[in-house]
Amino acid sequence: MAEFIRIYPENPNPKEIQKAVKILKNGGLVIYPTDTVYGLGCDITKMKALERIALIKGVKLEKSNFSFVCEDLSNLSDYVKQIDTTTFKILKRALPGPYTFILPGSKNLPNPFKKRKTVGIRVPDNSIALALVNALGNPIVSTSIRDEDDVIEYTTDPELILEKWDKLVDLVIDGGYGDNEASTVIDLSVEPPEVIREGKGSLEIF
Image 1 (cartoon, rainbow, N blue to C red):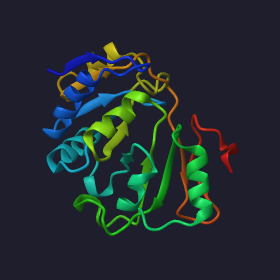
Image 2 (cartoon, rainbow, N blue to C red):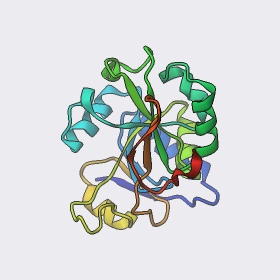
Image 3 (cartoon, rainbow, N blue to C red):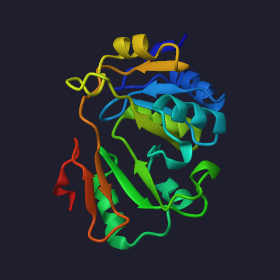
């Protein structure tokens, strides 16, 4: 049975954030709000948690397209090869915001992702998500929670999310209704940059 806690985005309660972080540090799975759809995430350093997410999503961990949710761009050098000024300026303009940027991965990627040439980076414009990553001290590996119903592709109501995911995760954070539009995915590892998926983020950042 998953825990269910309400956190207000205007002023995230540090005690509730710490409760969620404790679960992440113990290898738990957490569903949390972002600036787009609700995400399913775990601590990037917890191998068993990563394997649980891959199992839930029905993918091989090494081949998964999970994003690294960071608090800001200071984490980049841990996971991304050195990027040029133009790329950095695009990131600075767009983040935090509803984008996933695909960047060339460095040799320091966590073990399951070592063979990857690229990595997806997210810095969501959501105070709860950013507070979680800040208190955790490292990125959250994350994926969107999809709804089987194509009409409502992403579940937006936290109570319905709890009903559906109750036995699969350890915590659902109610941060208010989510969006049903995913992030815009842009590949910055190629020249010119390539739009992989047009979502909530405007393409006028270029």
